[in-house]
Length: 607
Picture: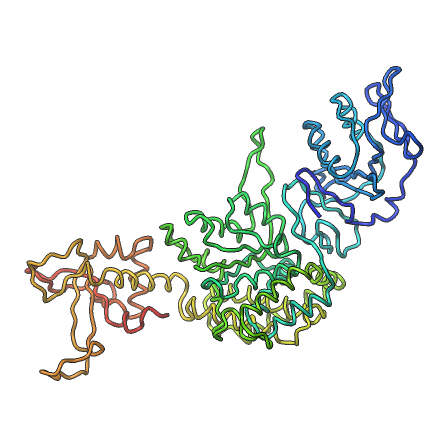
């Protein structure tokens, strides 16, 4: 089904019970023009009579109810008619369209099988007919999918809840929610073959977990599967997409403007937004895009009159993939990554480490590529059933589902998160815990065919792999400081540092300091037999200005000092002074320098 550019077709959305038992139409008059509707006979249609002239406006169309949002805004009218094949159509027309040209309304109705006179004067009368048609029925409408009063609103149906609700949106997007096949076939060919593969089960669990965020009061967040091409990353995204719709349409691209991503976020509220190939996004704007998606709020915009429009809002999970990490792409665009961005989009190595790319088990299939092809074909054949089954399970006992989710989240945190973890790790860990809960509960609801504990273990494996990359003992800021300092020495150590023992007449271009290489402590001289390189260690001494302006570029130098001293990478003069006075070539007096100890290279930047 398609969400139109102007409003919402609800032909298959809801029964509306007694509301759809149409009453006899009573003619009405507006500005001296009498409107009549003939449902039966040879003269079926909508007619307008003024003076002695009667004109045909359209084939029969009725307004069966008015709609508005909870706050009394976003008014609409539900139109109903039959096409020439006898199929019934219902469309929620935002009344704001009545203030524009007649073309938008005419185009929408014509595309849905209603015949309309195209004479401009007739079109104007037809619009007046739609606006003036009397009805006493009224229904609550919502303008975005997701949770509403215990029900879950989708573009084509509302699951659960006691109050009748319809979806009405003016967003010009293609609806990605669709169904094909049966749930049993999806379980057999998509879900069960994922068993034994941590990245696949995790990705499917993320798809279920999006609907839990609101229930457990968890904020937005995302996961990024990073790895080289042809290892199966796209398979994970296709499987996750198949929970809700056709992977080809449900999976979207990072290559979009901020406005485009904002629109996508709104249409995936309380669910999962899947974004393919992060490198397609502009290097200079990817950081802002991640912030916007994870903050759950769009930009503030003004109306033509200058007043502020309502700001778009959403709550969702994001599943992304790409060959590079967010940090890598931002660095290529000369953008400094912040802690908030890194932990909002948790970077998980897509390669599961079994020599099979993203896979760990092929279940008898001859090769990873064949296994991937089989899964992609299955996901493109059976889709959309698991998502609706999941929502029916949740809404059948919303309080019970919420309690169960909290139990599973607590279990994950207790069993799989290292004690004493810092706040940043705990924040990401809880997001993984919600994913584990989603996968486990979907299994308990007989939606996946998985055994108890499979989703928990797969999610724990992905969490541990994320934690290994992020750093177990440090905050994000500390990890990034250590990486940046180490990277500076690796890039410039042989070109911009002068040897303490070199000929002073030999110039070092754009010099930032000096280095000295000595035997490690405890190693005895074997002269004249040379030592191996492993027996030596190097100390780098950096000019204060170079340290602050280049090594610490984009960072707080004082924070860098504290972190390096804490890790033993920097040798201070005392507790108050981070630099040391040392003798360097061509200087008569000792000079203050930042002295980086060999410990930094011994640790190889880990931690």
